[in-house]
Length: 266
Image 1 (cartoon, rainbow, N blue to C red):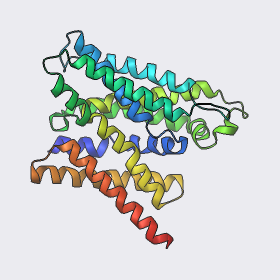
Image 2: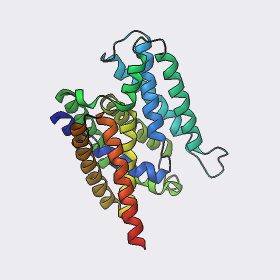
Image 3: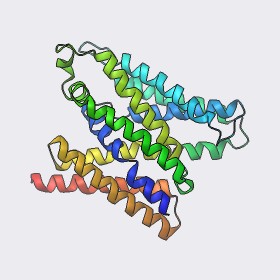
C-alpha cells in the first residue's frame, strides 16, 4: 500500500487548487466532462488495436482533452447566453461516455476497461508513474504561480478581466489546457471518479469552513490528505476497491464539513 499512499498524498494537491477555481467559475462538472473526454481518447486508441498499457493511450487521451479544453474556452457564457455552459458540459460528458461504451463494446475486454476508467487501478501504480506525474504537476504549479494574477482574475473577477486588457480567450484556453494535462495524467492512475472527487470535494469542504483563498487551499489539502489516508486504510482492512473507498470517504468528509458549517451558523 506504500505507493498508492504516496500517490494519494502527492497528486491531489493541485486538484484542490483547481477545484477552488472551478467552484468559483460555477462549472462544477467540467472536470468530469474533461475526464470522460480523456477516457474517450483511450477508448479510440484501444479500438485501433493498442494495448491498455501502450504509451499511445496517453497521447490519444491528451489530444482529446485539449480539444475539449478548446471547446470549453469558446463556450464560456456571457451575459446574454441562451444556453448555460453547464448544460453544454453535461452534453459533452454524456456523448463522450456513450461513444466510449460503443467503442468498448467491440473490445473483448471492454467491460473491464470501462470499469478501470471509472475507478482506476491505484494499487498497481509504480514509483516511475508517480515521479513523472509529480514532475508534470510541479511544472503546472510553477506556471500558475508565475501567472497567478491572471488566473485568479479570470476565475474570481471575470466580468472585469476583459476590461483590464486581459486576453480572456488565451488565458482561458491555457487554464483549461493545463487542467486537461492534470486530468489526463490522473485518470491513468485513479480513474474518472477520483479525479472529480479530489477536485470538488476538498475545495467544497474548505469553502464551507473558511473564507480566504489561502485558508481554503490549506483546509482543502488537509481534507484530501486525511480522507485519502482513511479511505486507503478502510480499503485495506475490508478488502474493498481502493478508488471507490477513497471517493466514499471524501463524501463523508464533505458531509462533516457541511454539518460543522451549519452548526457554526446556528
